[in-house]
Length: 76
View: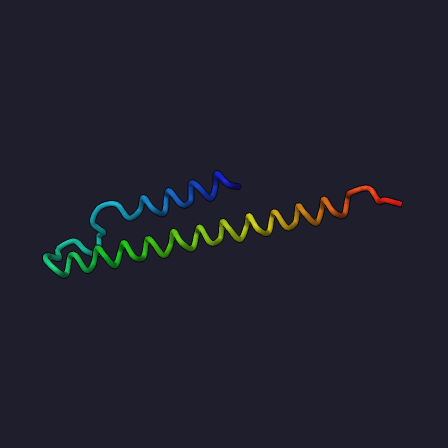
């Protein structure tokens, strides 16, 4: 699962390289604003993926801890 999230983060970050198609034909401040907006969107997207990653890890760890507690031998 960790590898899948890592690939997802790398793929999302790689989509930000170069000039976006929506920004082609713009010049000066308009081009800079368009590229900055694209970079901000990429940052937010990667941040959400990392948040999902952390949440999934937390849920898996909690599930594993509950399983370990439930399956340990009883002390009498």
